[in-house]
Image 1 (cartoon, rainbow, N blue to C red):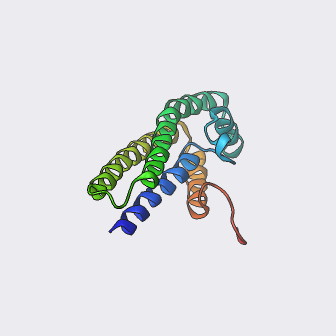
Image 2: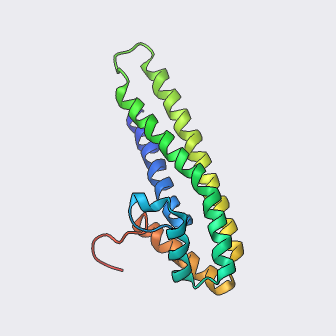
Length: 153
């Protein structure tokens, strides 16, 4: 049960991390992930956004990022707390369950916010840009966090 729980929390964390870079149109390393200007700059190049679209996308990203960043930080604290738990404690299972519940709340908040951001960005795009955006999301999903690994496309 514990392995399943940890795998689930880890999977949600990885999904959320990939979602951050994918939906917010982020690129590159962790420190750059939360830079709205870089995100919009990359989206503008990739999707050929005009100035008005860039401004709207930047507003969407700036609104989403604090929520996503806070959830990621809280999830990291939860992982740290899990490592600190004493597995011989009488209430160990209850403590793990509480951490899992908290992680699930944070993951839900993050995925919900990212879904909203994706929907809002989608509404800013024209049909061609929307098709390109969906293709971009598909590639990012396949490779995770937008990075190409190994050989292939």
